[in-house]
Image (cartoon, rainbow, N blue to C red; front, side, top):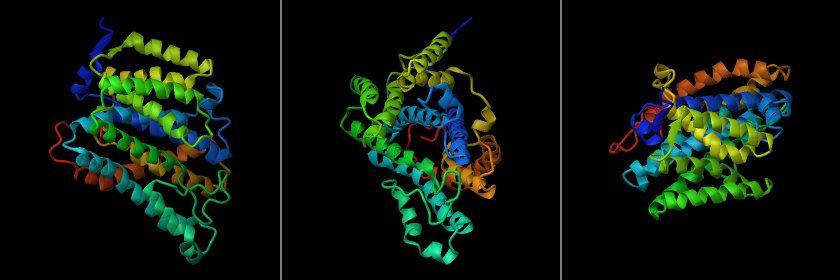
Length: 354
């Protein structure tokens, strides 16, 4: 019996992978995790918080998966782009069109329907238009006047958007490294290891904390891409990685271990497992739409039920709506905008919209 599928490079070149499915799974983890604070006001009883003894939430796990995969695919994208302008244009086309639409819907559709103010007061309030400045991803505003002010988790309209700035920032980091010819194994591996250990020492209250913490996962994906011809996809290695990850979690080192062993598991499932739900995966990449629509939908569910809702109910009621919106977002906005990408790309992965 063959327990190895070869290297990641061999499987990656075969263009058969589960990365879209993993990203969808990551988005669902975020939705499930948010159902606890959005229903109870706290994530203290969230299952992954209990399992890791407060080290991580399912939402944090989902975000980690997103950044690890992104580090891999964005490094690939830069290498395959005709130039840095095409690369950045593709990145902007992936993030901004759908984001602008969800911000407009939040301000001009959702807000007027649920605000405690009159529609005129709401629309004339300075904070209403200022919310649209979140499109720039810097100094994001998370509340709208009178919106969700009595929810179990009050005021926040779309708390998930905070990660998008870091995603865009890391896109720029890859561009700078590529332009300076530093996007090489002998540079990125030491960088990843430095960030890995710095993340364990830095205070979470420091302004730089999220840059370090999230780049730890992103750079792990970069390393995997750059070393893809050397990393073997082995069943035993995957089982050992899972066991080691659980041991480190018990020792209070979950996040440290995830950047190493969790990253291996992600790419083992992504490339070492035959493509799952192939027909569904080839329909489109709905994960980004699910991520950006989930929070306001879950808050709306909590609002409509006046806070009398359990986390499971919130998750069950909200998820089909979120999926429907993400499908619409994909076919009406994201897919059409992505069609504007560089026509001269060397290789295009089906649905892995890098």
